[in-house]
Amino acid sequence: MTPAADLVAELVRRGLTIAVAESLTGGLIVAELISVPGASTVVRGGVVAYATGLKTELLGVDAALLAASGPIHSEVARQMASGVRERLGADIGIATTGVAGPDPQDGHEPGEVWLGFAIGSEVTAVGLALGGDRETIRRDTVTESLSRVRQLLPE
Image (tube, rainbow, N blue to C red; front, top):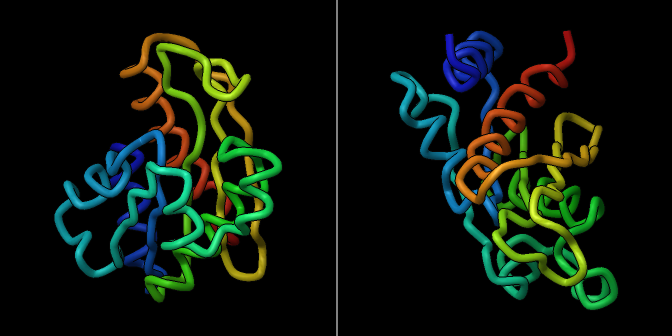
């Protein structure tokens, strides 16, 4: 079973919904989730906030935080996850922000990725250091996001 199929099945079983805020993955996570039959019962939608300003406008990420730290930061990932959960009316919010490459961005190397998770009262971030080319980094971010949100669900 793929990580997406496993997650969708578990969300259906629990009666939970999910929403996704994506930057470097550009919609790949939502596409992966909705490729699973039955996903429409649990996937609320997704927001691709690729431009930094959209993270504030669409997801409510603190503009001062973005100005001070840039978009590649653990707190940005947390706020993106919380924002998408709230704005799309889901039980769970997940978010991705980072550098897919091929070039560094704002002093961050390709493969530096932050995942945000808003599940229940917990809002957390996980940092990844991924290798490979742009496509590999983006695909690995999708796999890690789906696997980790499944692991973070309370028993």
